[in-house]
Length: 115
Image (cartoon, rainbow, N blue to C red; front, top):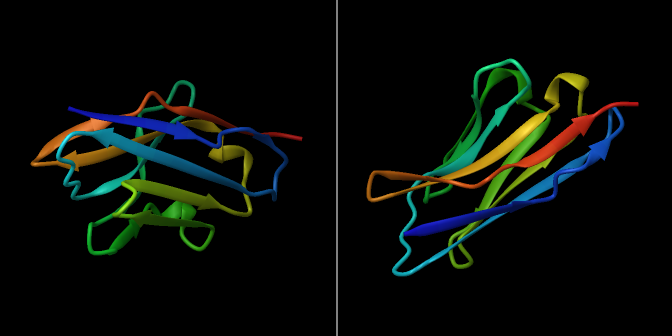
């Protein structure tokens, strides 16, 4: 069993920055891909960014050049640095982790971009 806890969500003005963090805990952790989804009100959940255990990354087009995903395998953490935030980035952000082909999810952290 893997537990994921997100932190870092907040209210920020357009153009601002936030750094989301997610920490995984559990026994015998060996996490493959990690990443972030988001879900805005009335919209489907959207894959934002992923990072492999080896550090390979991918991003949805709408955040390329603004968001950076990183991870620390020793600490079982993943981070999402979000810069130049826009109102359309407002959503609940969910961390996920895949271990032995089983996906695990956090409970989410709210990011609100508004003036």
